[in-house]
Image (cartoon, rainbow, N blue to C red):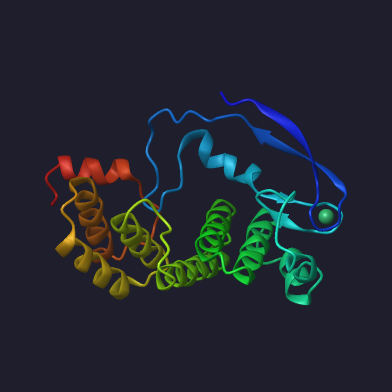
Length: 226
Ligand SMILES: [Zn+2]
């Protein structure tokens, strides 16, 4: 069980003090992650505590104690305020999307992509399916920008391709997902990645856009499905 404690932080944008809940290290009990990397167990719900939102000025970041000079202006801007107060998804998803918007302005594409993907997970939990699809599209675009900047956004090229495939599949873009999946299968020699890509291919062929896990991919391999 992770320990929860409160931390006091000065906001980088307005200088006021906020208190945020934070958890100690989370031990994953070996349970399975989703195909897009969303953790299982306590890590799954911990994403609700990872993003901070200043209650005075609305600045959102993983650590509101820091940031870039330009953030001070963006936080006051109309698009940012609209995102912060949007009714299209929950407040926590708004916070991740605001965070993503700021990171886009500082050209931190990988972090912007991960923030958008976290927003999608929150939307999934709260059944905001249209918003979840919009967040995944944003994540896809930001991860593409990351690649174009010759920066990585996952531990390996193979993991990046799996992420692209899963984002497209979850958004019902089966043809595009299949193209990347088949291309990746033609190149990969990594056994674990091959199992996941084969499972993705199977899901794409069934036009299944639901959430699935690494554990299910493994079970499917053991059953001799591919
Ligand atoms: Zn503030």
